[in-house]
Length: 124
Ligand SMILES: O=C(O)C(=O)C[C@]1(C(=O)O)C=C[C@@H](O)C=C1
Image 1 (cartoon, rainbow, N blue to C red):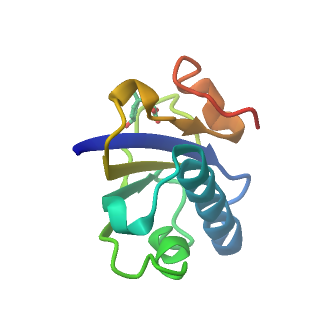
Image 2 (cartoon, rainbow, N blue to C red):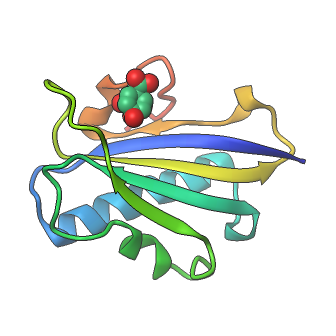
């Protein structure tokens, strides 16, 4: 068993609570499904938002999911680099798995696909 990291990122159109929660849940669901992981296998989830997103804590979208209440979550702000992609939510999931690092599927949705086209395996 190894401890691996899985990355994801997505964007929202507005600094709005429901949109942020929905985008976070969508990104998490895609990561979980594509990587076939269970909440029990997850060590922690680190979430960042760009400084233009302050309508809510994205962690709220994760801890209400069935089986996710005991997964350690942490939100923080991405560093405000000039010209950085706006309204972006990033996830880093640390997971226990037997898979190799190359088998980890990193998910970039919406405008965030431009961040790491080399890693993105999502078709959406
Ligand atoms: O992967 C991302 O979300 C990126 O924006 C790329 C990148 C990088 O340059 O590697 C930049 C900033 C993030 O904190 C993490 C990684």
